[in-house]
Length: 365
Image (cartoon, rainbow, N blue to C red; front, top):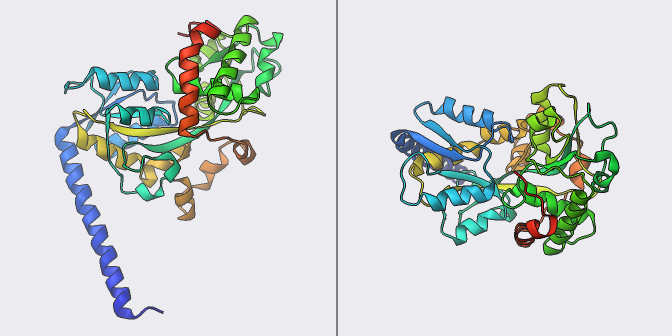
């Protein structure tokens, strides 16, 4: 047993550290409230529970107006918004971005983002964060098929099924594969299911898969979402499981929706957060990061069917409600998931964005 004076000293140090952090947070909150605004971009309310996250932040900090830009933008569009608004302190300049993992290093290399380490930094796995704090993983999901059961009798179980004549004019991506991280990684998943090694090879095989899908008349060049699925324009949409599950809940049985994680090519995708290097409201941006990486914010991701970055640490601390875990697909669906490295994602992204028009030739919009 440690001597009492050492224990007392340790307790005093912990109390002091907590006090310093509390004072720092009070200072940050005051500075953020003085700025009075946070500008976000590409945050659909049905994506990973973002609607509840934004409302939670607004409820906690009513003095800060949340200005939401282009909810349907892709990761590439977010970086372009920063480039296009350098020096602009108006409402069109984003303070924060949420982009696919491959876009984090790119944004850092271009000098588009600034470093900030949240108070829960140590809980974020090293593999999904920049050591210097420029970008940091926040949540992940796996690629899935969202299916309109009014129009699709036999639900496809795997990527190869999508090529069948039964699915003529039915299969869509949930984004433009020339700009959307979600769509770019869907091509990677298809390529891995067809034997490609993660990276350039799987990207090229994925392009060949979608070329065949398009030639068969099965591919629909429309960005798929809950509305297009319900209308029958895109009866099968390839998208992240959390988006599909959220859409299923939103549609509430009209039409009935089935969400399937394919048997092969099970791909996990991590999304990362960052603060613009040119943020007009840098303190509000930091406060936003503190909120979404808090226990409250991370559990809101889980409620939105996403796996939050701090999940393991929070589970060990007993602060993850079991009912949120139980609402997710079975654990075995995630056990097969492959987490591509930053280099693999970068090589795939380059292959897909450069080759989509020439190989597949479908103008997704």
